[in-house]
Length: 348
Image (spheres, helix red, strand yellow):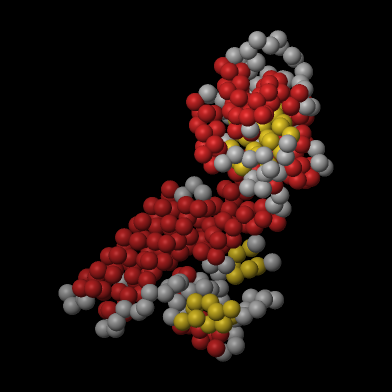
């Protein structure tokens, strides 16, 4: 299926697609995993056993001070385990699989406290530390978690073993239950493959956006060269010259941003500079013709290379409802005649 998508719309689709997919499959466990990819502590606002924001920040700082990282902590409502068949152990495993990073994981799920480790602490260490920290449960979850963080920091400084305990080999138990063994069964190669797949998808998306942006850059460059002699004439409007030079600056900025772009998000600067450059060229042409500069408007929906739009026209995508879109004068006339404007098309 071929969909009409200008560069800005294509970028919007690519940037929003992961978030839209996540929304469709959202659950307390996926929310926790998403948050813990970029944070060390996640607190679900509906958790029964909870901590406040100051206590959460204190935990984050404690993890740094004690050298306990990589360590991720989630505090969830008891209902979060429902997504894992009601089993807190499997719920924590699901969070760890969602984050897909090595390290130690801990979660308070309702009244249950679970901990485990992927390629990090020695087998059984996280479970032992969880059990030990529960001795502070009468003092509240913040104290229990602080005790656990301190223990992880000490274990990490001790080669991954809990100080004073013998090597348990494949052991585990207590607060960690059998979760440690489940986590150790997750192939590390699988985690790497997931990251590799995401990188490949992101690279393909970036290449697609950059290809369309390069076409826009070429079009703007040709437009600039075509006006070069006109603005050099002694009688040329000074403001037209200023608009022209602004267009050249925007072209250079867009080209530089294109070269630096490593992610789809980086292309937003390219699109912005191109839009400003196209408007500057339109203004320069108008002034050279003795006309006033046009109103600043969005680029033509059907192809930004058409330049800034001049009006809004009702247009309906195949199978969709009519909606107003910004269009150039030529495309507005085509739509008024009941025809479909020619547009840049992207395979989606």
